[in-house]
Structure formats: C-alpha cells, structure tokens
Amino acid sequence: MGVGQVPQYVSGDPLFVLDGGLRIVAWNAAVEELTGVAAEEAVGKPCWSVLAGVAEDGAVVCHAGCAVAREALKRRACSSQSLFVRTTSGRRRVTVSTIAAGGRDPQFLHLLRLQPADPSAPSAQEVEQLTPRQREVLELLGDGKDAREIAAALGVTVATVRTHIRHILRALGVHTQLAAVVRACPRGS
Image 1 (cartoon, one colour):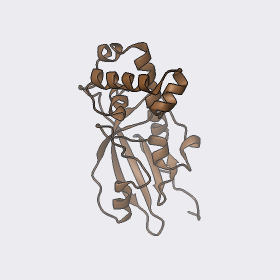
Image 2 (spheres, helix red, strand yellow):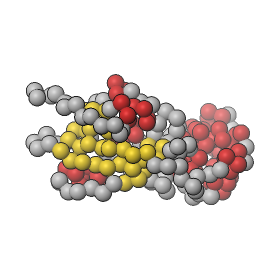
Image 3 (cartoon, one colour):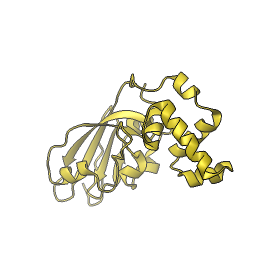
C-alpha cells in the first residue's frame, strides 16, 4: 500500500476509520445507511462533527478532546460505549466499539451497532402534549440554536423562549435542553 492510501475495510456492520487526527478516512456503505451521510460528505471531516455523539443524559461524548481516542492513541483497550449519534432522520442509539490499529500512523476503527429502541423513550403522547410552538422550539434546540437565536427566528422575546423551554423540560421529565432533544428524537428501530 502506498503512502496516503487507505486500506479498504469490509464489514456488514456500520464501520468507519479515523486517522490519528480523528479525521474520517474510510466510511462504509452500512454506516452510510445508518446515518444517511454519504462517504463523500464524511471523509476528511473530524468524526465528532459528523456524528455529534451524546450520552443518554445529553452530555456531549464526541468532541475534539475525545477520551476514547486519547486512550486508543496510548494503545489502551477501550470499552464499548452507548451513545446517540446524529443521522439525517434524527438521533439513533448505537453501541460503538473502538479498535486501535496501525503503527507509526495510527488508525482507529469504529464499529457501530444499532441498539433497539429505549423503553424509556417518550411516548408519542408525551411529545404530542407539547404545543406546536414548543415542538418548534425543541426542533430549533436540536439544530443547536440558543434561546436568543430561537427568539429571533420566531419573533418572540428571549423570556418567552425560556418559558417554552421550561415547559418542554417539565413535560419530557428531563433537566437539560440537550437531554430534551435527545429524549424527543427518534431512536433506533
């Protein structure tokens, strides 16, 4: 294999490969199917910007200072982790297994397994009890907008948006905006 060439990794499960800088260098058809993101869109980008993984409680898991990547770079075994990844149809719950490979030029293989739907996911009734405006605010939160940006987009005050957010959190039984987005998003099937 020549310099700069990436080996082909074959797997029936969703699989992608990162270089030592956490940039995606390979993205198979199964991960395309899971995420709805084409290889051409993913390859060359940092993994966290494509998957935007979060934990059950809404805590950001995928970021530039990834603890799993740091451990893998040290050639330490990494346990599988459960997280929600961004897809074109909403967040999906997956288990990610990380495998460190390579010598001088490290690579990390991430094998994803779709998890079944979470029984604690909100029922359609819970989400439907939100007003249309609250669902709109929740969708904008899911797009990464803050209260000020949402207020501007909807033509209301920041105080009104904050009131909607408080009602959303109460209705979904969560404590953070990110947890509300994760809880209301579609999960694995």
